[in-house]
Length: 262
Image (cartoon, rainbow, N blue to C red; front, side, top):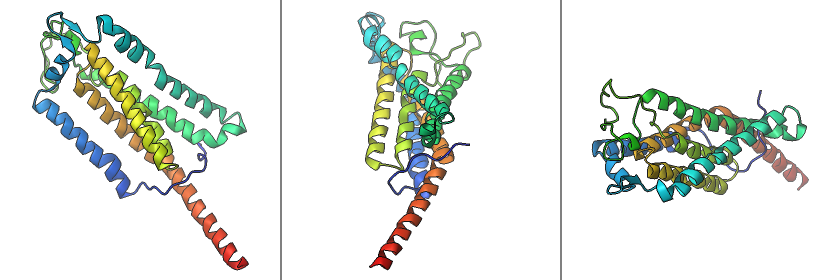
């Protein structure tokens, strides 16, 4: 059984306010944004901004392959992998070394948050049967465009491009926000902005290559966030509430002791 994580400072809760701010409001914004992309067919116009029609080439191909493919895709994937591997190492070490024991729950959460997020998006890619932009007519390919929720013709080859897997690995780093939110509001916000920034940069790199439409990466962000909200509420928040309660008891006892001395 995972032990509690190290002490923290802060006064946060997972009550109605938490679910409103972390699930209902982000979910509503995500769904409205996704609905707007689909209702106004914005995916292809946005993708055309990354595609040289005359040269039949993507911005992230040719000379752009260095930054879009080699740096952001091939190199960038090692950032979430390294964080996940370090968390797994710390979790295993917590059973072998006493020094790591206080970090067991935190390390387990980080590893699970990244792994479950990326694996879930990867499985959905296999099931949804949606084309990559680079396979479509008008973007250097030869397949017809099929709307996301439209009936896909049976004669088309199987496709595996929705949601965006590489973007999900960047967005998965929002787990660091959940780790820090019960300890430091300032650091938690920096972690959140940093993780979202990495996810956006990964998304831009993939869209510039023609690997994904914007809706693919937006869906990945929503899936990752939802998974991690529930993982946090299940794994981290109960321990944080317990530590908070003990901290209040300790402070109350310290206050009473000071009053008696006075």
